[in-house]
Image (cartoon, rainbow, N blue to C red; front, side):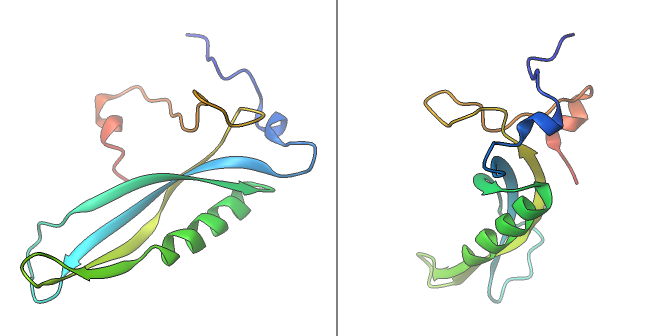
Length: 118
């Protein structure tokens, strides 16, 4: 099967030295006073501009940590969202972001990979 991603990793660098990266972030919720093992998790994909994958991961981590927050639910319990980590960082293969731009991709051979347990 031929990939539709025709560029090599080195080709992803933009002339100004900064490229767009998609970062998959993972957050975990907790409720103060509850010890339940059932938790709500969130995966979100954000875009960051960086010189390389290392910088993109660092910028994504800082962004994610700034999104940690707490609030009271309708039962008066305090719900907190905690950043668990950057699961993946991939370079975008588009020159500019427009409607329909592909911002995330991954290849896999097993249906178990769909779950992306890292």
